[in-house]
Amino acid sequence: MKLKVLVDNNTLIDRYFRGEPGVSYFIEDGSKKILFDVGYSDLFIENANKMRINLLDLDFVVLSHGHLDHTWGLDPLVRLITEAKIEGIDHRTPALVAHPDAFLSRKVGGLGEIGPLLSEKELSRHFEIVSSREPVWLTERLVFLGEIERKNDFEAKSPLGKTSTEEGEEDDFLMDDSALAYRSPEGLVIVSGCSHSGICNIAEHAKKVCCDERIRDIVGGLHLLDPPERQMRDTLRYFERMRPHEVHACHCTDLASKVALAKVANLKDVGVGLDLEYD
Image (cartoon, rainbow, N blue to C red; front, side):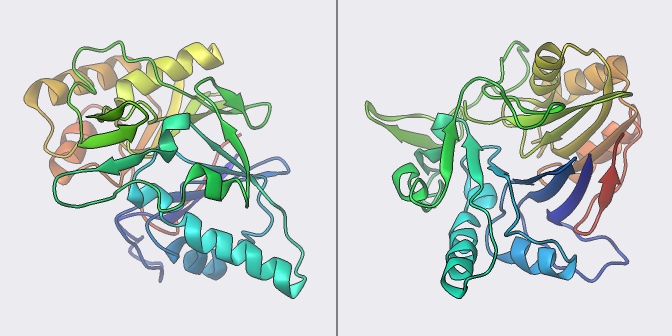
């Protein structure tokens, strides 16, 4: 599997790309091409063009969850594919894979709407929607994990704003927050968006789905932004026990959390332009 970082809060020090507070990764596994999250704007398209990545040749677009910094790039992606149709340019219509709740309306404080700008109905006019709480295998070795089991008592305990459902407004515990897992010969590679469901919960769920206790790498946001003391302490203890070969923590992981993680794990730098490859 090959992974390229198209969007992150940071850029690699020696690469001339732009960043934004969002996430987008381009993944190749065999002949399949996957776009995991689409960031906040059309920046993922700009950076992909610089990397000579053809986003008109995607098999899947996968959403980690339904927040603006992971979904608002869907509008420019729809425009890109539509313009290709108009101009007669070769293109595919990718399947859009997400938890059903990823399409809900969301609000936090006075920010207004922070969920997807396009509804599931509107998106269904442009993509084949694969809406699933269960794991979805994208290739023989790469899986969308679906709804994450939340077994740890130190993660994902506080709501973040409100979500609008048919029953009305409810506290938003981001039950749609999911991740990818890749079965490499050396163990699992977990690719997360924000880890609102808890990175330790995600790792345990990935182990269960993939029937492998080993963790090769964790790539993505860990949602450790000034975390409660207990959450940070127990997360560090979990990483000490898990002993992943590497950890590529980025996006919503603050400096203090990275420093703490570096004491118990082989922490690596991440930024737009990063190339990762796994057997």
